[in-house]
Image (cartoon, rainbow, N blue to C red):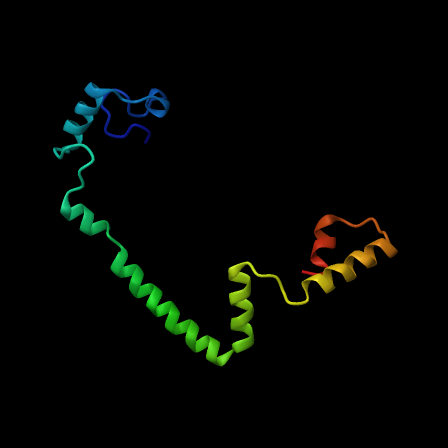
Length: 120
Protein backbone atom coordinates (compact mmCIF):
# COMPACT_ATOMS: atom_id res chain seq x y z
CA UNK A 1 0.00 0.00 0.00
CA UNK A 2 1.31 3.42 -0.91
CA UNK A 3 2.24 5.45 2.16
CA UNK A 4 2.21 2.34 4.36
CA UNK A 5 2.58 3.32 8.00
CA UNK A 6 1.59 6.93 7.45
CA UNK A 7 -1.46 7.48 9.67
CA UNK A 8 -2.96 10.28 7.57
CA UNK A 9 -1.72 9.53 4.05
CA UNK A 10 -1.61 5.73 3.71
CA UNK A 11 -3.50 4.61 0.63
CA UNK A 12 -3.92 8.16 -0.64
CA UNK A 13 -2.40 9.67 -3.78
CA UNK A 14 -0.83 12.52 -1.80
CA UNK A 15 1.62 9.95 -0.38
CA UNK A 16 2.87 9.25 -3.91
CA UNK A 17 4.52 12.39 -5.21
CA UNK A 18 5.16 14.65 -2.24
CA UNK A 19 7.22 14.36 0.94
CA UNK A 20 5.24 13.32 4.00
CA UNK A 21 6.56 16.21 6.05
CA UNK A 22 8.25 16.14 9.45
CA UNK A 23 5.05 15.74 11.47
CA UNK A 24 3.70 12.86 9.35
CA UNK A 25 7.11 11.14 9.34
CA UNK A 26 7.20 11.36 13.15
CA UNK A 27 3.69 9.88 13.34
CA UNK A 28 4.60 7.09 10.91
CA UNK A 29 7.76 6.25 12.85
CA UNK A 30 5.69 6.09 16.04
CA UNK A 31 2.99 3.93 14.43
CA UNK A 32 5.58 1.53 12.99
CA UNK A 33 7.53 1.36 16.25
CA UNK A 34 10.67 2.64 14.55
CA UNK A 35 12.76 4.39 17.18
CA UNK A 36 16.11 4.46 15.40
CA UNK A 37 17.59 7.72 14.11
CA UNK A 38 17.01 8.62 10.44
CA UNK A 39 19.26 6.75 7.98
CA UNK A 40 20.52 4.37 10.67
CA UNK A 41 20.13 0.67 9.95
CA UNK A 42 20.17 -1.44 13.13
CA UNK A 43 22.85 -4.14 13.07
CA UNK A 44 20.38 -7.04 13.33
CA UNK A 45 18.51 -5.80 10.25
CA UNK A 46 21.73 -5.08 8.36
CA UNK A 47 23.01 -8.60 9.03
CA UNK A 48 19.66 -10.22 8.18
CA UNK A 49 19.65 -8.51 4.77
CA UNK A 50 23.36 -8.92 4.00
CA UNK A 51 23.46 -11.43 1.12
CA UNK A 52 27.18 -11.26 0.38
CA UNK A 53 28.08 -14.64 1.86
CA UNK A 54 25.12 -16.35 0.19
CA UNK A 55 25.98 -14.65 -3.11
CA UNK A 56 29.63 -15.67 -2.89
CA UNK A 57 28.63 -19.29 -2.31
CA UNK A 58 26.19 -19.20 -5.23
CA UNK A 59 28.84 -17.69 -7.50
CA UNK A 60 31.41 -20.26 -6.45
CA UNK A 61 28.92 -23.07 -7.13
CA UNK A 62 28.10 -21.58 -10.56
CA UNK A 63 31.81 -21.26 -11.43
CA UNK A 64 32.44 -24.89 -10.48
CA UNK A 65 29.46 -26.12 -12.51
CA UNK A 66 30.42 -24.03 -15.52
CA UNK A 67 34.02 -25.26 -15.35
CA UNK A 68 32.72 -28.85 -15.49
CA UNK A 69 30.35 -27.93 -18.34
CA UNK A 70 33.21 -26.24 -20.22
CA UNK A 71 35.32 -29.36 -19.86
CA UNK A 72 32.49 -31.59 -21.12
CA UNK A 73 31.23 -29.22 -23.84
CA UNK A 74 34.01 -26.79 -24.81
CA UNK A 75 32.38 -25.48 -28.00
CA UNK A 76 29.00 -24.86 -26.37
CA UNK A 77 30.69 -23.20 -23.39
CA UNK A 78 32.65 -20.94 -25.74
CA UNK A 79 29.45 -19.99 -27.57
CA UNK A 80 27.68 -19.28 -24.27
CA UNK A 81 30.57 -17.10 -23.10
CA UNK A 82 30.59 -15.20 -26.39
CA UNK A 83 26.87 -14.51 -26.21
CA UNK A 84 26.97 -13.48 -22.56
CA UNK A 85 29.82 -11.06 -23.25
CA UNK A 86 27.98 -9.51 -26.21
CA UNK A 87 30.49 -10.69 -28.80
CA UNK A 88 29.50 -11.35 -32.40
CA UNK A 89 30.09 -14.67 -34.20
CA UNK A 90 33.41 -14.97 -36.04
CA UNK A 91 31.67 -15.11 -39.42
CA UNK A 92 29.26 -12.26 -38.62
CA UNK A 93 30.39 -9.92 -41.39
CA UNK A 94 30.40 -12.66 -44.05
CA UNK A 95 26.96 -14.01 -43.03
CA UNK A 96 25.45 -10.54 -42.81
CA UNK A 97 26.80 -9.49 -46.18
CA UNK A 98 25.50 -12.70 -47.76
CA UNK A 99 22.03 -11.97 -46.39
CA UNK A 100 22.15 -8.36 -47.59
CA UNK A 101 23.17 -9.53 -51.07
CA UNK A 102 20.27 -12.03 -51.13
CA UNK A 103 17.78 -9.36 -50.13
CA UNK A 104 19.07 -6.96 -52.75
CA UNK A 105 19.02 -9.61 -55.48
CA UNK A 106 15.58 -10.97 -54.57
CA UNK A 107 13.51 -8.33 -52.81
CA UNK A 108 10.43 -9.87 -51.25
CA UNK A 109 7.54 -8.74 -49.13
CA UNK A 110 8.17 -10.56 -45.88
CA UNK A 111 7.20 -9.82 -42.29
CA UNK A 112 10.05 -8.47 -40.18
CA UNK A 113 9.71 -11.30 -37.65
CA UNK A 114 10.21 -13.85 -40.44
CA UNK A 115 13.07 -11.94 -42.06
CA UNK A 116 14.91 -11.56 -38.76
CA UNK A 117 14.49 -15.27 -37.96
CA UNK A 118 16.01 -16.44 -41.24
CA UNK A 119 19.62 -16.02 -40.04
CA UNK A 120 19.11 -15.99 -36.29
